Length: 373
Ligand SMILES: [Zn+2]
Image 1 (spheres, rainbow, N blue to C red):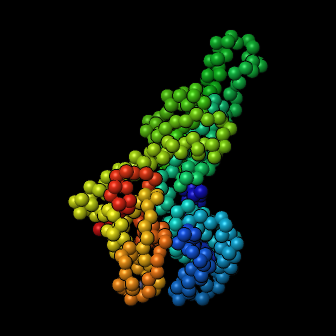
Image 2 (image 1 turned 90 degrees about the vertical axis):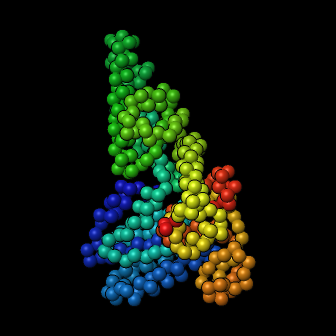
Image 3 (image 1 turned 90 degrees about the horizontal axis):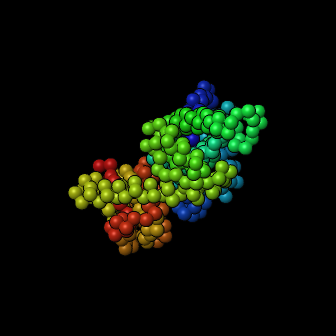
């Protein structure tokens, strides 16, 4: 999973006389039927050879060997997008497996190139999940449907409810107060750390879970900056696995995403009606994509359509044609038109939003886009 803190660290690295190879590769199995990623990488490199100095090319040759063998041997773990940043001279190697496709790109420079990764952080909502107990808390991040534990916060010195130990001289009531004081201190510490992490990672939304008691107590203590970010709460055991937490929180963030998507779809429909930089329906969306005008593409998850693809220039159409209108090339049936459309949109820097369910979008053709111009 990408973290802004980690990217910040990577961005600080300087090669001085060493060069970094930053590779972004679309490895979506659906749009890469032949699995020929290495060929794509070699072609991208070839385009760089003319621009780059021979000395630089030589200095990164080891990186290329590493990248090539990595791609050949790790296909099984590929998702839709792959990012590799490598600098053999500095002994630096970092890979990111992304569940959204990326635009193929290779950048050779004395600094790592991380902008596409930062864009993914900015464009796709991340959720912080706080699982809180009376002496212990765990913070998770959810991004693009994946969960990762970010930090554990354990406060020493919170006495157990039944352990009387050295406190036998205290009355039941003062013992309760004593526990209370420590629990309160622990929760304050948790919230302080939560606030810091959420702002340094720019996380916009939060879900809180734990025992009923801990959740309601923490809610009363939340500063406004955090409470306005909460989109739901849930109950779970402190030892819950990441998978269990993902299952419990999925309905919460899905509902939130549905609401946001509905807003976007409303915006598209209103704008498209007024002819204001938005289109709806496959025909208009495809035209906008071929013209490179799409800023945000919205489509239903189960939206599918048959189309034709020009073998020569890659022109994509749903019209029934026998040869390409642009290059007269031969056309073939394309089975994954939706994936190809999404990939094209990403290649022109657009943000792609796959909508799980939206009756209005379904009624209006299942696909729409907000345009740049
Ligand atoms: Zn063509």
